[in-house]
Length: 311
Image 1 (cartoon, rainbow, N blue to C red):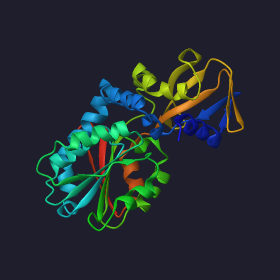
Image 2 (spheres, rainbow, N blue to C red; image 1 turned 90 degrees about the vertical axis):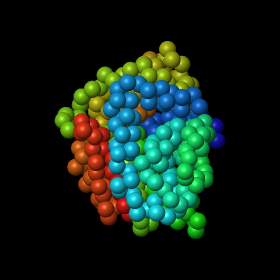
Image 3 (cartoon, one colour; image 1 turned 120 degrees about the horizontal axis):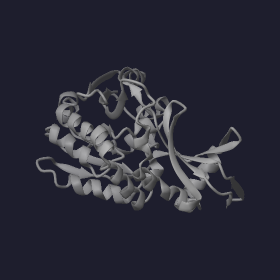
Image 4 (cartoon, rainbow, N blue to C red; image 1 turned 120 degrees about the vertical axis):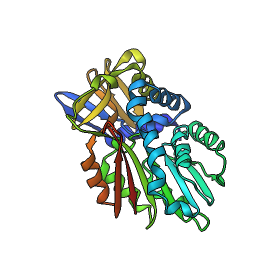
């Protein structure tokens, strides 16, 4: 399906809200930010953006290397699928194998809407030695959760370990996301969540989200639906109990699609990204609603957590 159609269908489906005389359009879906190689490369630049690398990427990698084997030792005694949602370049999955000594067959199942990223992840994992590894890339958004686990499960690989890292969970409504994901799991499956946590006020460090690296990552969405760079202005704010990234429109524009007309007006905003940030206790409470056994480890600065959730 053409990407422009996907995005315009989403805008029509979600519509807009009106606040203070302006329309707020919602195009925020983490999967949309890896629809093309251009956007995937934009994400990889974000990964190397120093605040992100220090506060998310490196902390998560250290937690995986130090803790994974301690918590999933029972499932790795048998063949299983390693389902890597939002796989990136496969580095976190590689860290999984560096931490866990798998003695049986494993099938690596990276999940991304962009083949470019799937190929990157498989390329990284093919370098691993000492594991009988096969590959089943799955081209999909991050929200088709109830399908992914059952689709990968079979007689040869009866159990699933699902990696949900990089604070992907924070870009969705947490109860809905965990409910759908858990519905595709069976007893003995694991979900491993990597997510930022807070220990003080929520509304801090907003300036780092205003950096050009985020604008470069998000702007292809606006270009795809018909806006030029000089017709919009990127910004980020804390509101609605979350961090929101959005574009302010500097021009009026009508966009026709499937018999509908989207009437964008100067001053409107298009939401492209959001992140919730929870206390450790909040995250743990949410996960315990859907999983029988939940264990949490945090980094030394108490800014990032891994949650090991057993169905």
